[in-house]
Amino acid sequence: MAKYLSPEAKLKRAKKRKAKRMAISAFLVALVLTVSYVIVQIINMFTPSAKPDPDLIIKDGILEPNTSLETEGEWQGFVGPIKKTINEFEVVAPDSRMLQLPENGSVDMSYFENVTFVGDSLTEGLRIYPNIENAVAGIAKFVSNKNLTPRSFIEGEITFDNNYRPKQNGIEAIVETYPGKIYITLGTNALTFMTDEQFLYYYNQMISQLQEKLPNTIIYVCSITPTTAAEAQKRPIFAAERLYVVNNQIAKMCNELGVNFVNLHEALAGEDGYLNPAWSGDGIHLKPEYYSIWVQYLMTHTVHRPDNPYIPGSPYYKG
Image (cartoon, rainbow, N blue to C red; front, side, top):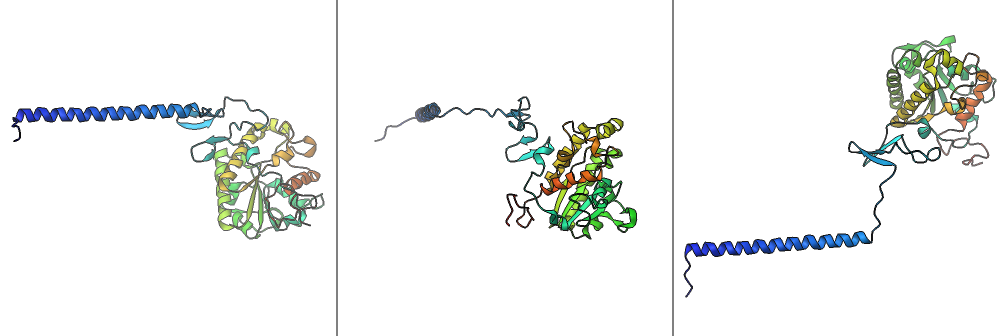
């Protein structure tokens, strides 16, 4: 016969059982944590400690380059141009040398048979000097005129000098040449009266429209060419430091739009960042014989394609 327990006794026994179960649970939890800690310590004993990336620091919750470091060599350390995040690389402080089209073998002059050059009076020099070495006049097509800016191709029509082209919308003028490749060189005029933001806005719009209308055309965007130091002294808007900043922004724009940045500054500027005064009559435009330097640079900095007419001696020449 079961022993009779009063309600008070039953409640007291239930409390004891509950307390016992809680004590056992706490013990098991403590045991698991202790064992886990021991296992982690054992693993750490046999695992080399991770060293922090010396090139990166955490700033405002974002992993960024450690700009306090000095680079060893021209590009070792990779400090400055790239902000590293968890999932992507974003160009935040570009250097055009990091984004420019590299040297990629040399092509012959037939490469320019389906090229359209677009630009201002500097590009006009390529059109009007047919007797210089590496002359593209007579081979390539041109949509160029003095004083043109990217805005010229977005707003209104363009009137071309010497009636070599009819007055027409700039974008349509380019499209009607049916180009396989386009080289754009603009900016020298724009810098004289437009802010950098305005210039880059219209440039972006111009390239975006060309990409929409000519989706299979290779687009090259050339840097703003240097002036002489004397010209920059007269007009500080052409100071080497200013052109360096703007060309970096052009390179960044090209990277974002997926077009090719051609760093003509590399070919035409001296170590001081300025154009050799012997190469120019007015401090801005090239003398005819020096356009060959421009063209030769283009011939050695192309997007690689198997059908490019590479010259003998180039890595991609097929004979």
